[in-house]
Image 1 (cartoon, rainbow, N blue to C red):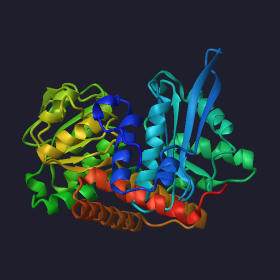
Image 2: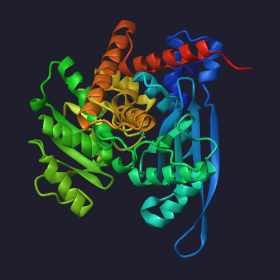
Image 3: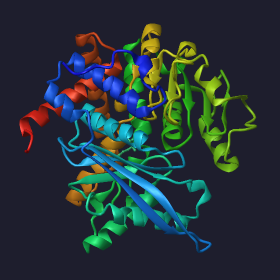
Image 4: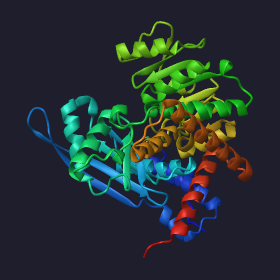
Length: 425
Ligand code: GLU
């Protein structure tokens, strides 16, 4: 039997890696995972740290620290985004890499998991500094990434332009254009139609299924969205178009609330112009923490990790928690939410629309044949809806909550392939 940490108080609640491992251990134990396989799946395959010298615009050199953690390759090339942020840590990147492995397995796409991060403050850097940083980071990782090895994508503070630089740098070294080395590229540079919206659209698809399952209706479903990055703003816009009532939204500076519902296109336009929701006329101001505790049917955290913890989980009022961000809920909050009867759509299912469309992009690049947006969205819907029902069925038949069901389903799939492939020794 795997060695289980059986007291959740011993884990550091706000360490995403420990939160991830707590759930992994719990799911592995329920699966009766073979102790040898447990040892293999408990650790990442490879962790790379690089030090990246960059000429800053004033002529001095700054050395940045970057990571790429390649968690697992059993089901295919490693896959996962790269984030740029001042508070990136190796433990965070480790957790995010493992989540990619489980996420790709939950939606059953042929990838393993990886994640990258660079400790930097992109808001304080010029475009050309960011370009130099990205290119040198790519060059440092040149032997480790590639269409059949590890395929990066955007994550926090990286975007289509970042992916274009990575693709170009990799291609320069390979002496040929290799589009499938990254996903989330601009459409004109062999990106996929629908990729930019895919995470938000995937959230809409799984929330629609949950709403139907619980006998609710979009028009009377109040939605609170935390975060106005790509995921939060796209999800809010698409849900508004579908007839949901978005009652609150926030960005890093804070949020706004109107219980009668917000005009989302107008609000997003306001935020684009003012770079904040502050003083938006038809709403009350709320802080990011107050926003999580608002009365609503759907809470959609789409900002960052550790938002719902043992400190505030008791005060959460939603019926459905749809995790747009990776790791917004700590392991210590899981039990509290379960006792409250919150229907959780866990991150490794809820936000898997992004990587699913990345898979479509990788397929299209390798075919050299590009699909219409309707086809991309239809295939995305098929996968998200089927995966939602797979997780619900697993939860019901094993009498566990949705999060543990998603982990069990994913670990079972990765363990099965690992067993069939065997351990090369
Ligand atoms: N960064 C996204 C995620 O966390 C997308 C990863 C990808 O498309 O590879 O799922």
